[in-house]
Length: 306
Image 1 (cartoon, rainbow, N blue to C red):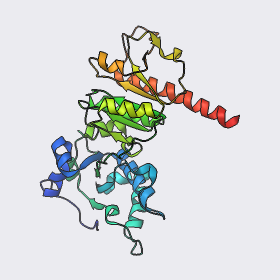
Image 2: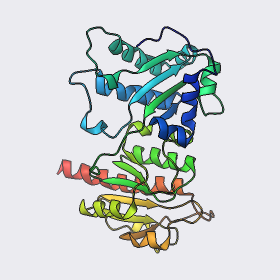
Image 3: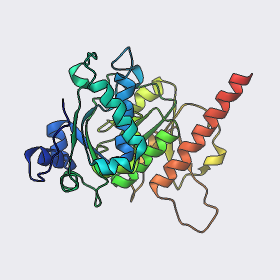
Image 4: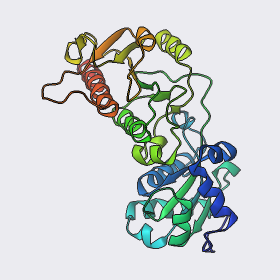
């Protein structure tokens, strides 16, 4: 493990392998995805430190379905503009290169300085931000986490919307995000950028078969709510917003199908007080998830105080 040599050839095989992670085929072949820019890289480093900086080292229960940092390529000048990321990398180096540390192989990450030209060739963003990480795509556990709050994306195809919903679910304190077949690949670079680091905070399960997932959710005691712009019941009238909840969000153009709506315990619309005709799916998801999160946290606080 060394970062003594600077990567300077944009056509090198290693650069091409990292660049290929922009494609679904490249991700599937290598089992890795791109985390590009200061926010995802910061969270990848922070998660590595949670696992390996202190004893006992290794998988914590709440990190088992989260990515592992595999390699990080960076421009030192770019790092100096993001002091928090730089400080985290210094801590990582302190653990990695301490001869007294006995780290397992999966904790050994590849660190390498790279020229701006190489980083542009590796990355997918229009404007390189000077740091690119390759991270493992985690495998889902056999058991679904207990969901107090969850989001299910049913045919959400726009990467920006998918990433925004993942970020909103993370911010609202959701326990997981699932995506059914036909949804955007959550490990695609644009989704990862839109989620701004949330891929390193909560389990994300693509390719989930809806009926089996909902059966498990019901067994856990959660209610299933469909976000439906045509529903008669409006969000403020939801009777048990504090109850464990999984929200279903549908395709950008068509919404949820009639069959998908039948899986829900209730169909819920968001009232529109102005003149806008509708909300896009990502904005609707933010409103719905925060409505549930606010009610759940208020109920939890009241129970603590009583």
